[in-house]
Amino acid sequence: MPFSQVDLDALDAARKQGAKRVRFQDRDFEFDTIDDYIKLRNLILNDIAQQNGPQQVRQVRIYTNSGW
Image (cartoon, helix red, strand yellow):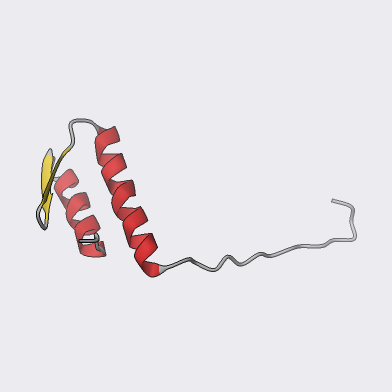
């Protein structure tokens, strides 16, 4: 099952409480270091981004006559 925003919020709340282990649906995750937490958080963020589809990028160009 894909991750959701609720899972991300739960992960952040668990980290604030000092938890070292979290469970999402049928999966257990344990993080010993902050790097493990960041990897799991990035995994969830990437999963959420893939569900939302590609985001449009807006490009702004600035032109001046002053030379810079």
